[in-house]
Image (tube, rainbow, N blue to C red; front, side, top):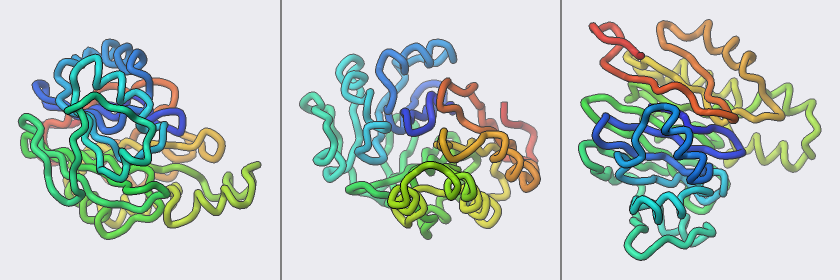
Length: 260
């Protein structure tokens, strides 16, 4: 698993098992996606599908070109596609209904509804080789579905979008601050930490804190509040400027393997 980019300037997460892989969102350009995957030693030819969480352009920007160039199907809800600006090639749009798992090669992708200011927002877990990775970003509040799926994960990308004090004292207008804090906005550092402490699994090896605000958060501040609560889980912060390393989830914490 790897973050190719994470933030309001573009979101794209890679999850695979060596033979089959998926992208959760494609919010950076096709060219930049290609460059970053090459630098990580990942083959774009293994991508079997792109899954879209919602229609905002920082999650869809590169999907059309990637799909057209490589013949990759884009899985998206009907409402999300309707409200997006995408024009996918015939046969490349695959609609789904949240709550129903979707097989992709040897992977199983499970979409579920969440709360965000979009037409039909979803998050995903991806399961393969007995391991589950979650992508939980763009979430206004941690509903029961988010909590349930978080508790099943061996690794997760989890939104930690803003620091309450930085947002309050920042230059954003009042209406935007309210939107960010609202039940259809984003998770704060404190909300993400609460979710992590209360609903992580005993086998959560890796937590990649994601979608940090450039204006209202600071990576070191996030690490400073999460690391004391890590309890053996590796904590890292995804960058909004470059790709992460490739993290290899080999087995459950406490067994013979580890997170690479």
